Image (cartoon, rainbow over all chains, first blue to last red):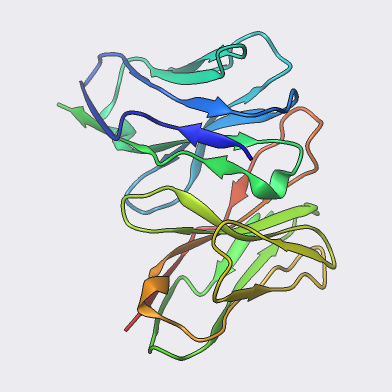
Length: 114
Length: 115
C-alpha cells in the first residue's frame, strides 16, 4: 500500500515571500501521478499542480512549482510571491495504477501573513 | 460540463437513521471513490469502484455500503448513522491512469452531522 507523509502540520509565510511545503511518499509502483490540492475553508478541493512520474521535468503552474525527486520519493511544493488568498490547507496526493485508491497526506495548513 | 455532483450538501441525521449520499459524474470516468474528512485531518478512503458493477472496500468501510449500477452514479449509503460518522464526505472520480493530464476530480463535499 502507498503512503503519503506531510511532515509540516502548520506553516506560515509573509506576503510576497516564498514558502516550500514538503511531501514524501512510499510506493513500489513505477508509473504514478502526484498532486497538490488546495483546500480553503469552504472545503472545496482545488487542484494546484500535477506531476507524472515518468516526466523528469518538474511541473510549474504560474507561482507554483514542484521539486520532484523520484529516487528519494519526495515531492515538495514551492509557492512564490505568496498571496493572502494562498491561505488554506494543502494536501499532497498519490495516484497509482488503481486510480480509485488514491492516497492523501494529512495536510499542511498554510497561513499567509500580511 | 457539471463534473462531479454530490447531494445533499448539508444533512443532519439522528443516531440510527439511514441515508444515501448521491454522487454523479458526467465525464465517463471509470474510477469513482468516496472519502471522509474529519476535522483537521486528511482524506480517508471509504469505498471505491473501478467500473460499473465493481466495488471494493477502502480504509474505513464499516457502516457504509456502495453500489455502481451505471458508470455515472456511485451512491454511498449509511446504514445506521452513528455520531462517529459526523464528517465531510467527498466523492471523487478519474480516468484510467496511463495518459497525460489525469486528475482526481472532486465533488463539493457533503457535510454530515449525526446527533
